[in-house]
Length: 501
Ligand code: ZN
Image 1 (cartoon, protein in one colour):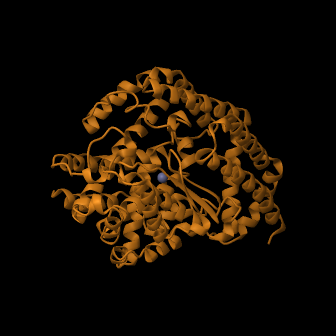
Image 2: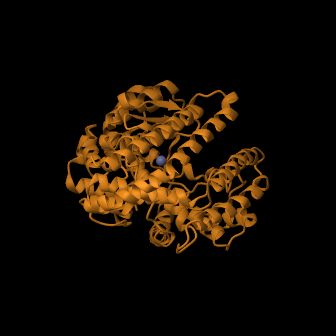
Image 3: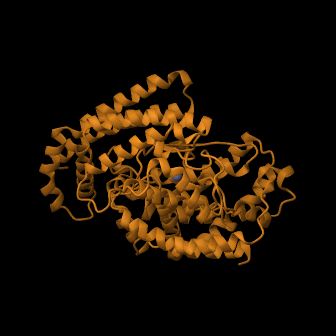
């Protein structure tokens, strides 16, 4: 190997190890740390993050990257080494543009804002957090200003999560999708509501967790290189390609909570477990963007986990685990229950059809706030009005309105929400391409066999880690850039069947 590249990789490995150590501390904080550890843990994490940031932004790395540029250019376009050099150079330039003093100011501010948000939720009072959100908006704009030359101010913030995507592209995609979704939501919700009472009986926590584990291991989640724990908010985290962990939460009166959050997080984890092992310890060993990551969790959660063929295999097994609750419920009734569509107030509880409307309104508010068309103080009123228009509901209080998601209270305004809908759109594109290549996938799923699908995803997506950008990856895998047609086809077919449209 080129000695300079070896030197760069050695430095990157140290940074990777510091980040992984910080990851273990975060995982511990969110799964099993006693509350008394909070203050010290915050400090410990800040210390590690600071050391890692300093190590990454030092001149040695910049110098090595400069020296390696001609070497990268001499390599074939598709080479892993060239990709590593290009990607590291992009990360490096981004890291250099944001002064350390700003990063410290921002992380202090988000820590206090998050606390204020918890208090605001206790008293259900937006006013508690309003001044903090004003400051968040100002800091989000300042962060974007470190990346001049943007078309719209949200672009740099979007780029952090979904590199290469721009507000104008996303708006274009969302507007097309909205035109298709609004009539579909209207058609479905004008039909009689599905009965999902069977999902809200009493289901033992232990049995739910065991059943979930059976599903995710069958999907291909490798417990030799992962584990599942409980946490208030489910998440996936990796410390190396050989250690990718997930969490779930269980509600005894809601069968779907642990089940679908486990499948969702396992979808993220399959991605991380499937990255080329040669990328270990380098910036290539991660998901390519938030949107692609969500496309993988949602593909498994919704296109696989909420499909009829999936439950043809698993429902009889679920009935054996919960005979009292489910023996009198047919597969068809169960399938309708887990795919119930209803206009609802909370994004994370929303079904597949209405979900994206929740995301789009948040995305639009981010644009309006950043571009000065909406003032922070007017947000709750704007929220209520948009909700009435889009979903025909008025949030009865702030907790079920503007205070429901932590995103704006623990990060920037801008770039926080688009990944969910981009993920939904791309999940259908990937699934369509996989089925086109292997028409037997559906029949295999109905027999509890996920190998062909899993292998297709590994070959076309997982193995590449961050080697390709979102646009490159989806074009290589499906032959097309991001496009809503497969997703609309999927929703129309599925929900016309379910709701006799
Ligand atoms: Zn997710």
